[in-house]
Image 1 (cartoon, rainbow, N blue to C red):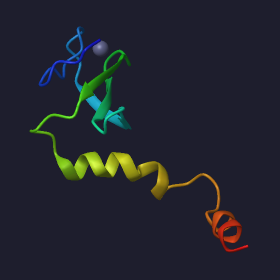
Image 2 (tube, protein in one colour):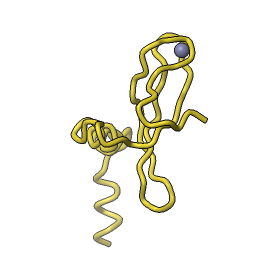
Image 3 (cartoon, rainbow, N blue to C red):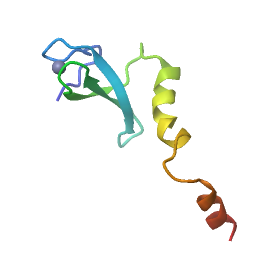
Image 4 (spheres, rainbow, N blue to C red):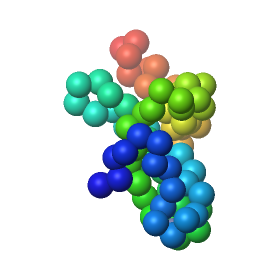
Length: 79
Ligand SMILES: [Zn+2]
């Protein structure tokens, strides 16, 4: 797979947009990039020159915009 640091271009030459982050075993983060031109997904290790704030913003996006009310979780935790 495409796992070389700094390689952020799809074979078609389209711009790669970071869409998700996942945690690998051992604690490393990897970014899922999607090609804006053809939709191809690539997984890249987080590199030293990545924007840390942007990475965290991607990571918390799902939690910040839950598709269900979080009050259900609070009620479960208190009872
Ligand atoms: Zn592409």
